[in-house]
Image (cartoon, rainbow, N blue to C red):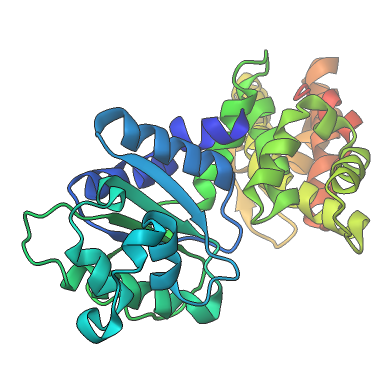
Amino acid sequence: MTGRIWWNRITNPAQFIEEVSDEVMSSESVILRVPEKLPWEDEFLETLQTGLERYAVRSVNIHDARGIDSPGEYLLNKYFSEAERNKCWMPTYHTFENFMAQNSETVMNQRYICIRNIEPDKIQDWINSVNTYLSCINDEKDERAIFILIINKSGDIDTGGLKEYRYSDYVTDFDCLLLCQTILSSRKFTTIQTEYIAYLAFNIAGSDYELAGQFAGYGIELARHPYRTAEVVYNEKNIKVTNLKDKINSALWNTQIKTIFPKMETERRAIVEKYRSELKKALPIRSATGEKIENPLELEIGQILLLVKKRNIANWKDYNMLKIMKEARNALAHLEAVTFTELEDMEIF
């Protein structure tokens, strides 16, 4: 389910598939450069296959390249009968690719051929095989197989003229955050709750977008019990994590800097505006650095708390909120995460 959301509803991953599909349906073979762990790879292939077969007379054949030493020979054995293969005389055709290109009757010509799991030392062999095959087509109007080579290797490769689509040119961490928010969108969370859980899922998972999606699925449970939830997920995935507590603390702190700090600033300004005239009477004051403060909006949380306590100018709710925010700000300033109870006290959860 999450994989289908990623490849169909999140804009950039969906655009990656769409542009690849457009190129392939225009009868062009392509290279797809994807990360070593492509998120929801099976759903990616399913979405790509469904889209191509919906609008074309060709069908999609997906092949696993692991253990294949000779791409041309492999394709010959897959798409040609024994009787046809017996006609492949090397003195005449020189290469398997040339023989396949000269054979107009093969079912191979009506296929999109997708090759996955290409071993690093065989990548150039596959690219060369496809290019050799395409170069041996006598007439551009002749039917031919159309190839999709999925390559996990980073760095430079010789594409031989094949168009290359890089997953990294389309997808960023923002898409992962958007995925987490989309997963949470059907639940009755406020905007800040959704943002908080999404950021926390992302920060714990790091670059593993599948893991982030799974964390987000826990919803408020992730926010309430991040350590326990992480342990459950990592055990389910059989992932060993050293210093889990430090990892979660770092994720919590980074999440709260992104989400709680802005919330506290909004609350600070609201309280200042509410008691502006009373606070104005208490000014000017000097900051800890000796700076003169005359505008109430320049007051920090601790300064506001001191003034409202000294002059008794705030109701209990606002005074208590200032106390909680002061403690939370101090914790974050010292690289410590705010507890879930404190988040509840700040009316975030």
